[in-house]
Image (cartoon, rainbow, N blue to C red; front, side, top):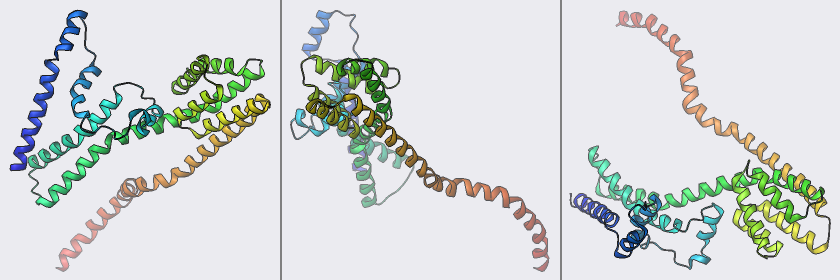
Length: 304
């Protein structure tokens, strides 16, 4: 009961603190709203950042944010909002506490009387899941984005080959490919657009391509950047290099599709054993079992 009372007190206190901070902004924010006018609407993201911001300070990164591996992961995931670190670390602080309170209250409502050691172990596991849940979400976004870029990059390489063979320069070809890829892959088009902007700003082509590989995290794009850099350095034909690279990309995409198709029977094994086979056996053997019970039931009762 003491732990239950403390958890309720902390949850209510934190909820009231967040509500107070949301409803009563600071003096600087009040002055800015006065200058901007009363008709200015607050974005929901800014409201969430204001509520979560104080809790994000409890779990900041240990190293410099500019050199942090987490920043690179955010870039790979396509998350470039300046408030993303605040939301991430705020979630890592709030979710363990929230999951712990909800789990404890759920056990109390369900009248589950666990031993103290078991209860503490369950709450620790739930808090750990809440702490690592933001990392799992970021990893899922990264994997989905990398897969999207990998599957569409062979088409971009083919378009770039066509542009180069048609007489366009590599920079103009990349710009044209960026415009065409917006229809099929927005993520790849955004990364190519950033590469074009870097080269227009005066960044060396090799460095811009390496930055593209770093942002996407796809190994094939890293090979693509090294290939174009070596082609510029040694004066080899870019068209021939792109043709060989495109063939290799299509082969890798085909091999990956075949690999995923080969995994399907193994993945279907557990649903078949756990859900499909029992239902099929009940449908097939059910009528026979009912008939057996009807025939043998009177015989067994007569013998008794």
